[in-house]
Length: 229
Image 1 (cartoon, one colour):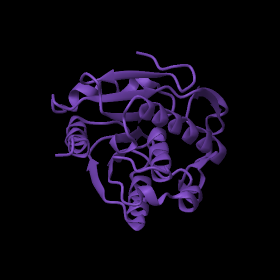
Image 2: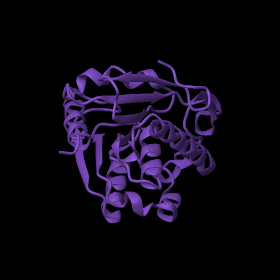
Image 3: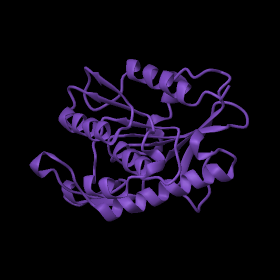
């Protein structure tokens, strides 16, 4: 099912009728929304939990670091100098606005913000961190996989009190050659300093996801999105 033209195009999967919760899941640089669709059944969510998974497609943009090659991306990366990602902050803001539009659409479809999780892998995870921690309304949680803090100054200046205590699931491969595990660890330390509860996992894998990780994400999502008793 494709989304309306006024928001990012996306693939949608519903695990039950009349979903009352949602997961907006952003792919990595160079991929598209199809990338994590196969994960949904592997999460093994309870049959009683009706969740709408939204997998948006990033627009194709030139990536400066990659010699200006045009590819699906959430923001431009200028360089990898000094062991970090030098990212286009304006592009991050534009994508954050696009994520906010996806959240607003879920609200209009009857899913309150406190029943929405933002998730992302690599560059998508960087957006999940920033869009989630700066969102003006409280989210159910943030899933940040094999990623980093892309705009530390932006995050420091625009963090939202509404998500000061939002739980985070974060994970990284200790053999990741694309986003070094040190960047994932540094992001973990940032959110610990902010005071957000974080469930951290490290796996013996490269820049990807593994079955153990998916199972643990599923358990975390089931807990975060369980209907109030």
